[in-house]
Image (cartoon, rainbow, N blue to C red; front, side, top):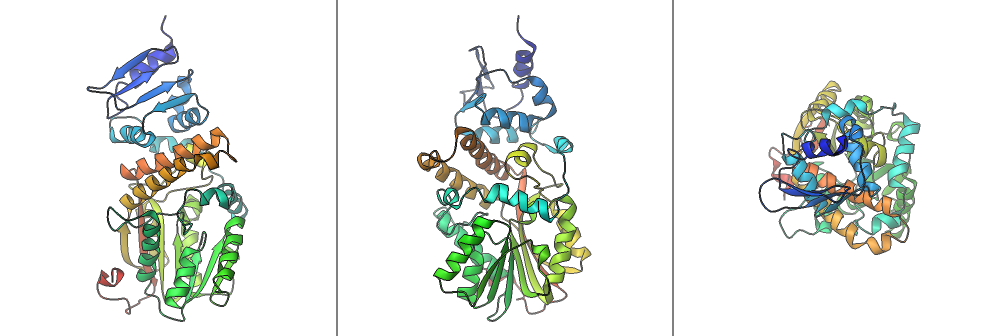
Length: 392
């Protein structure tokens, strides 16, 4: 007699993927779904109870892949894109599952713990698959031949041009990572740059680089929460890939704090992942990759910045750029596996493979986006009349 679990999956896979595929069940049976030659095979190494898939498919299937209960014969990114490209699939939109995620208030203490969880797993690990600039955010690809390193340098330059920096100005980078932006700003634009981070590993690496490049008089890095900065203001404030960590209830607090830190007439740029229609998170990502993370909607961000009286100057989507960035990271990650396996177990490796490929798929399919928001504190009529200055 066929089990209820198998009946469930046979029904589920009839309308799950946009591409034809094979499913190999735990009893050895292989069934083909869709018209045409199979693009990939999903392999059940053991039964995954249907209750978990019904209640929270993202976490249940993510955990199944991590632990080897589920395998994929084919390109992981393409399999996930096939899920998302089928708009009739119940997994093409995860909004209804977000209510399952237990939201813990994101105070300063929790922010430090969450950042430590993801970013302090070892600089040596990140060096294996990031580019030489150690930039862990969306690159900016000018053409098909742009390398990952060039894309990251392009992104930093694109941001610095948008900020209309002038020699001698002060710049604050909230969530400065491994320091590429503040280092470049100080060297090329002759500004006084300050970076803040909650990652101890990034902080130590930044201090070493600043000293190595002889920039102690123009670049400073602080191990602190941006909300703890007191009695200092800046001509420019930038944040790249940080606001996704502040939590849903703290988006307005981010803009309130920037308002306090930015001088009158100052310019700020926010670069962050965005929700297309509404904000949210993913239960598996929240549990295993970015605890406390929240992807805000474009409308929420614009509403919050205008509440503080900021003038919105420019908004730009870089969605396709992040898809390509993640594809580069994924390839680098796979190429570095011999070294990664010396310090990380197979569950960790499968978890990070799923994370990188799932995020690439999400950007490519438009489930999420990424935007740069440029805004000013009060009027600033010194910004050029057209966007040409961003590309000179």
